[in-house]
Structure formats: C-alpha cells, structure tokens
Length: 222
Image (cartoon, rainbow, N blue to C red; front, top):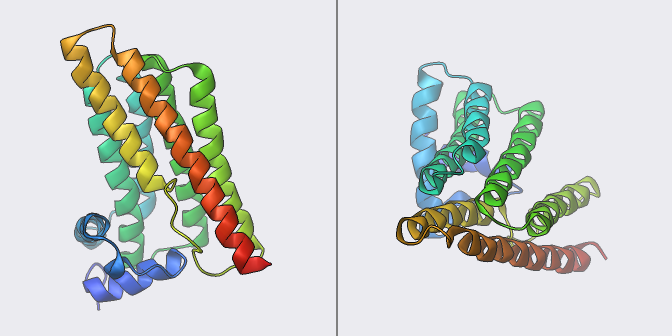
C-alpha cells in the first residue's frame, strides 16, 4: 500500500516488530483504543508528509511546557496528555510512512526520558519533596536501563509488561497534576500534599516494576 495507507493489521505487525513482538491487537481495550487513535492520526500525518522527528520534537516541547504551567496544574495535566499522544503518534507516523529507524528510536527514547524529567520538575514545583521526585526519576530511569541492558544481552521479546512502564508514568503524571489542580480549587494549601502522595505512588510502582523485570529476566536468561 502507499504511504499512510497501511491497514490496522499491517500497522500492528510493524508496531509489534519495534516493541519486542508485543501485538497491540491483543492489548486491553484502553491500550488498544489508544494505539488505534495514534494509528489514525499517524496515518493522516504521514499522508501530508509530516516527519516522525517533527512529531517527536513537538511532543518534547509540550513536555517542557508542563513545569512552566506548574501554577496551573490542571492545564499542565492537559499538556502531559497531549505530549503522551504525540509520543505515540510519532511512532505511528514512522511505521505508516516506512520511516522507522534505529536512530529515530534512540531519539524517541531520549525525548521520553527528558519529558518525564520535566513532568517530575512540575511535581516538585507544585510541592512534592525533592528527594521523592529524584527517587521517582531515578527508579524510572533504572527500569528502562534494565530493559535496555537485557535487550543488549540478547533477549528478543519484551519479557514482561510491568506496573512501572511508561503508560503508567503518563497516567500518574496526568492524574496527579489533574488532582492537584482540582484540590487547588477547593483549598489552596492542599495541592502540595496531593502531589506528594502521587509522587510516592510513582516511586512505589517504579520499584515494583523493577522487581517484576528482574524476576522475569532472571527466569529467561539464567
């Protein structure tokens, strides 16, 4: 088929090839629906000639805007959601247009880590303790580092989908800032407590995710 005209099934095969063999057609309804929306948007962008790198850069700009909106947490949450969609759409655009490359995958991963750091800076500005914010960022980075090293060691498939994956981090960032914004409307001195609890949840999920990764990879590689 022509550029931007892959069917959903063809796209799913290409997407799985870039994500450890995980078939998006077998994902849960929420994830599958999200990926289908990304596929539709990515197909449209591919047809008009938008480069995947441009979408990646746009998503990074949205992420960097999040801490700049820390005084309006609810609006910052909207930017997190838009950035997450851009992160999904850039990959869809690459697959549909036949422009998926290892270099693009690298840049996308770097943009993801920078974006998550920006979200955590917003958490800190809203009132989360710095040590908790650093722990959340460090554990999330370690989660991705472990998966990358195991891939380098020769493991071909995704191994396990943990509770600490990027979609979880997106959800925590979005919900956390949205809750902080909602609480701010009721009582101005409560957002800091709310965002602290949410950051602690981020840390807990990241830690459990790392343990899940280590257990799965230990079984697979021993």
